[in-house]
Image (cartoon, rainbow, N blue to C red; front, side, top):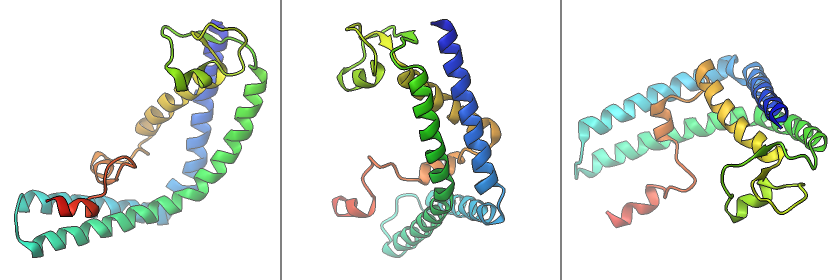
Length: 186
């Protein structure tokens, strides 16, 4: 079981490294991406500086200018995301093939024991393709996903590909309500 765990961690590290390598080849080293990233950083810093200078003001002209700056920033972010999309699509196809291959290798094998009982909707993933009723048994797919999420985020930070904190703050979360729709509450 320990050997399987270490192998899965190595596979996750290898696939994350390969994914970042492909992304670097297709996206990060291009002049277009570098230009978009520099533009994004510049607009983000400019917007944050304006927000700090303005503070809480009731002047509608200033608020409109800030909203226009935010829209420009969102447009640049959208352009950057569209530019990255072709790389993400290629990586997704390649990793889907790899995942099905590795899944067939580890099918039916308990690769780890979980120190907890997973909640309902996660049990299907953590106990996938395993025989038995012990929900603390862990399948390949669950451990691989956990390792990949952890390794890839840290690898992006180490290699310098992760978005800056200022950019991350500006990017909207799919669960956060958009600001423009909530203006009527203010």
